[in-house]
Amino acid sequence: MGWKFPIYFFTDEAVQTVLAADFIRDHFVNYAHEFLPTYFPNSSFYNLSVSVYLQIVPYLLLGRSIFVTRATRRW
Image (tube, rainbow, N blue to C red; front, side, top):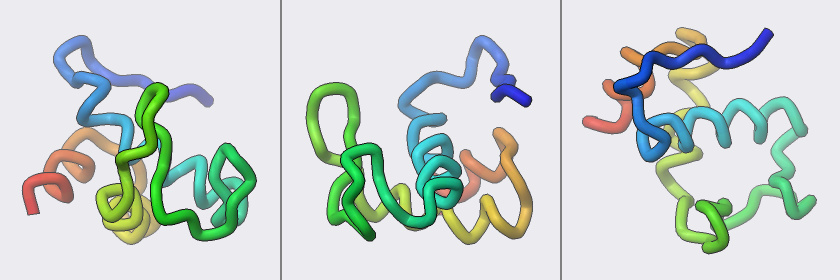
């Protein structure tokens, strides 16, 4: 089951939710195999942190959706 986003849902909006979903799937380990990392990768840089952690609870409670991602980012 793949992610399906509309054309107007840009990667800078989706990246936090995708990273949060992968983080949960991988038992709170990031792509570099670090447990509960301070930062997450954003392209070739590490600069995402709190925004990924903020997406975890809404993702677990409400699932993945554009509305949930945007509402969490605006909060």
